[in-house]
Image 1 (cartoon, helix red, strand yellow):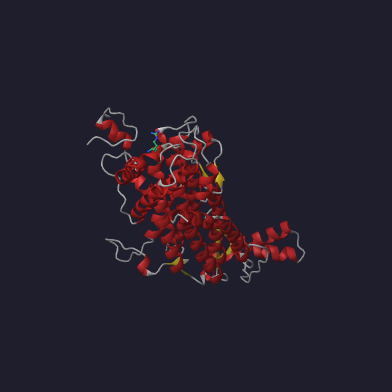
Image 2 (cartoon, rainbow, N blue to C red; image 1 turned 90 degrees about the vertical axis):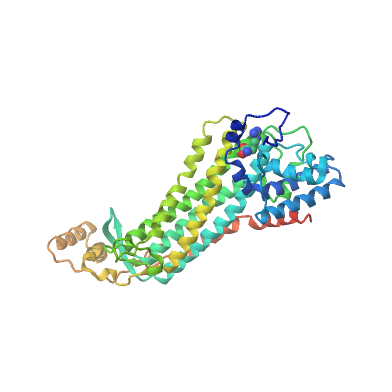
Length: 448
Ligand code: ARG
């Protein structure tokens, strides 16, 4: 079938060329349908204030767009065979219902700023979900840290036993890491939450567009002012969000590696309930931590996302290129992957059981060597002499550990500062303008 194209001038496009240039775009654009409609609602409201759409025409268009929005929300929106993309499909549906009126909505706009806008609106929603899921994991980790704050475990450097650590520190470390990741996500949110609409093909329009109006209608913090820069934001926004996702993914995969190692019999620090493990087809005794292994791999894969995006777009000059379309294929599915990992990590980190008497094992005695050196130094012996004495005691087999440790400074075993870490996280969460965005979108859909 010949494609229905917005740019059709009566000449057929080679079917193979068409297949290649559309690629997986229809599949990806279905994710953008809701947002494409929202963008059109804001755009035509603005067009009606500059007399490009009649006051009587506006309600008809808005009502029909709302129907399409509902379809998209219910998962019923389809891009028909032969229709190039979501933008063409929405315009086609409007035209079928409203005739020539449907063809008016594209004034002062290009698919270039339309897809830019769709990606931003879509990403805003996804960032919100990722932020909420990350906060859930954070809360679980803080809870586990508090719950197990007095249970000691060995700390390692070079994977050699080093100094006393605790489960309070271990869980809390990953919570604090997520608090930092949230700062990166907030930066990504800020860059995402600027309106590119009105930049059109990348050079603006001779219509007196009111860009501030669409910015407000869509709940954006501000706009990407310079129209050339607005177009340059395609890929840059995705890369920035990808970095934020990669930060969260890095935290999860590091924790997953620790957890895999700590469940091994050679460590035996943590245990998963049987129903959270998987078995072996040949070794009857096996209870494997596959969940941690898969989250590690998936999260490592997510960490390649910024690089993939950069490789696709890095050597492009300013202005639109079709290359940018390919970013959607790697960017859009990655949200679900990260959300799956966050969800599973929340589940498994709530179920995890820790061993209480790890340090009773004599092989960990030497982790208390620094405690002994410090005790001697506190009693007046110069540090270097104390270090030497304890070293010789160890060499000669005379070292007796004192396991009653007292660490009091901020962030140490005895003073985790989880309240301070929680406050950092809370402050960052409070800086996301989710409510403003929600309210604006709701108002726009309900035409209030
Ligand atoms: N599917 C296209 C993309 O994702 C939409 C924009 C098309 N613009 C164009 N000038 N061909 O980039």
